[in-house]
Length: 80
Image (cartoon, rainbow, N blue to C red; front, top):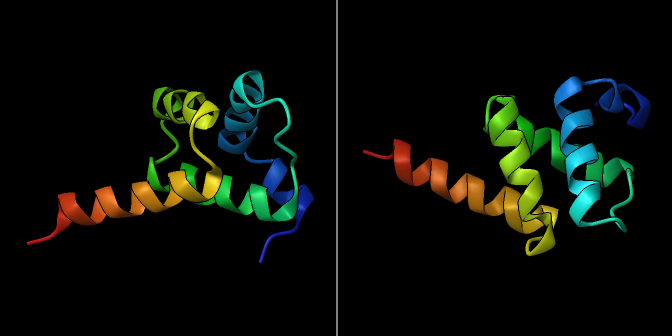
């Protein structure tokens, strides 16, 4: 498992956190949050536009909700 500092080095995580902070300034870079952000970025394949769009949703979703919804959506799209 990566440390908090190692996770923060990933450009996708940095971009997500920078953009999310604009709409959710109370978001803290805890290990748990960074792991969720890493999972979200992985699910959206590190695509910068997708990261920016996902981060903008932080005003209405928690990281947990976003990660769960992405998992459900990807399952739906790849099932069958």
